Image (cartoon, rainbow, N blue to C red; front, side, top):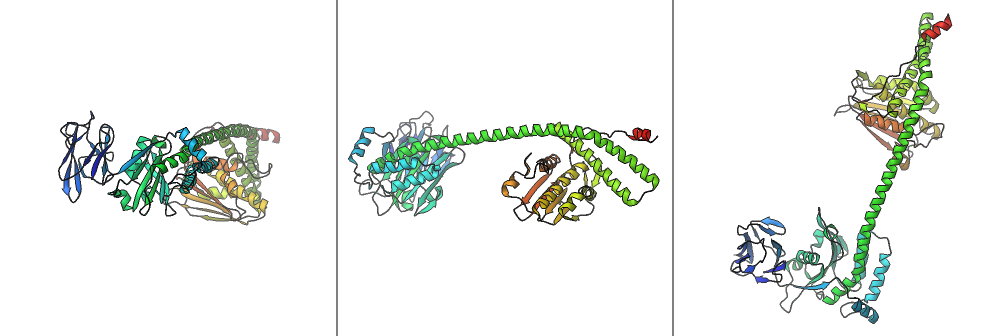
Amino acid sequence: MHLIIVEGPGRGQRFVLGNDPVRIGRDPTNDLIVDDTRASRHHAEVIPLGDDSWLLRDGGSRNGTLLNDEIVDRTILEPGDVIGIGDCRIAVHAVQEHLSTFSLKIDPESLQKRLRENAPPTQVKKSLQEALFEVGMLAQSDLPAEELVSQVVAVIGTGVHFEAWGWIRWDDETGPHAVGQRDNEMIDLEDLDPSRTLIDAARRRREGLISSQVGESFEASVCLRRKQAISALALPLAGRGENATVLYLERGFGTEPFQVEELNWVAAVTAQLAVDLQNTRLFEELRSAHEELLASREQLSRQEKMVAIGRLASGFAHDLNNPLASVIGFLQLAQREIDKEEQGSRTKDMLKRAHDAADFCRALCRNLLAFARTRPFHPGGEAPFCVSDAIERTLAICEARLRDAGLETVLEIEEGLHLSGDATALQQVIMNLILNSADAVRESGTGSKLTIRSKKNPDGGIELEVIDDGPGMDPEVAQRAFEPLYTTKDADRGSGLGLFVVQRIIDGAGGEIELTTSPGSGTTFRLRLPDSMARLGSEELDPLDVSSMWQGQSR
């Protein structure tokens, strides 16, 4: 096994490990001298253990000894390991390896000469001109980076033989990762298992490198021999740091090792690829910035819609409140007169429903004003209310719309369910969901049943489902269902605010809402609500006192 300084002071120094310890450090008396200010005088030692194994031991150095970029005190050396002392990197090799280097700067005159000759070199099966033309055509396509590299490698394969390849990239957070191919099967970095010494050296030096035989006594490195490979080629393509990439090619036994001539040809072919990869990265960054800009514009559009909704809600609530207050007042007086005259129970029931509906509308006005003024939600502190009662009151208000749609209502409500907070908010949510189902069923002519289920959640709160067997929604419609001002209904049937208000109430109350639907399979809204719902912070809207006016007219 050999120790070779591959980077830093003393680059090229080589020491053959034998039966004696090898001392490493800054002092001239060491066997392997490291002329680095961060190296101690006697920094480390490599000790033979027998059976062709050696122990690396730190000698109490000031700055520590690294092995594969990790600080160690003592460890067994393996072929392919890299010892780090200051800026010096010492590679551990099982056998003597020859690294042929090639500068990435292509000589224009030499390249032009080859193009003019238009004849393939001895070791290359395709002319450089033809390969460059094919790569140039690929460069005009809009392929993702991985696909582009794969296609260019296919072009290289028509000129230079190899049995496995990989495109290796480094990320500052995740480290190296690769995509490649072996035996016509896609592989990752672990399956590729490249010569780490080779690719690291190619990356650091920014040079194309070959690991190949030297004379008749050649034995492949342990990494290559393990995979029955005889030679490997590594070529940096583009970038530094997180954008650094290396192209790795490998040949197996029974073939000739890679030659410098082949390295030159591959480097010339991939010179355009390096530019394309850089352009692809810049394009991806530009596209990402464009998408962020579109998202910002969409967010601004939503905010503008919210402002418009707020103004609409405020004006509507103020305009509706006064006549509604009068209606409530007159209903109260009518109730008193009916009580005096002892009218039939059916008339009283109808009047009570009208009064409940008017009260509910007044509560909606209150919430609309609070919404328009962007008041926050406050924790619910009111007394608990019965969930079943809130649902039944809402169904009574929506009775006419449900009857018009031909919907039969099925209630599956667990007994004893209570929530604290704003009962009106829950009623508003249920009413919007019910009317959404009723409108969908009426317009499509499909569906006959509306199911409302509610049960206690084991984790607290309740789960409530509103289910219809109507037409369902297309995926696009479902995706935009909660978007403000989005509606598929006619202008006189919907404003696009119902489901938006539902989601806002549920979110503000600290709950969750989930939509499940598909064309022809109905629609399910699943709500998860906490035990204590939040409520909108808003002023009370008191009805007008019309009793004196009514009494005055009576007189």
